[in-house]
Image (cartoon, rainbow, N blue to C red; front, side, top):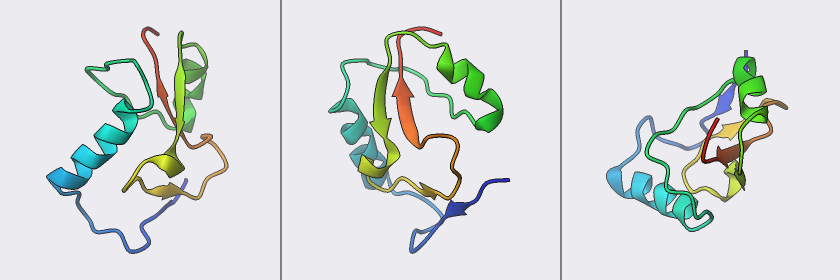
Length: 82
């Protein structure tokens, strides 16, 4: 099982922090997603089959937890269709 480094993160996100992360995602893509799916390593094959993808590294997203796993790659993958 993977681990998430909580560091000095709190156990919840404020609305302002959520909005800041959402803005960072919106500013890096033209996609306008209405839903999101967080895929673990067991669903990586699904992520490999999406079309018209914008990749956003997790480390540029404010308040995003740092993964200690080597897989998944550590990126937000936005697409039009699966």
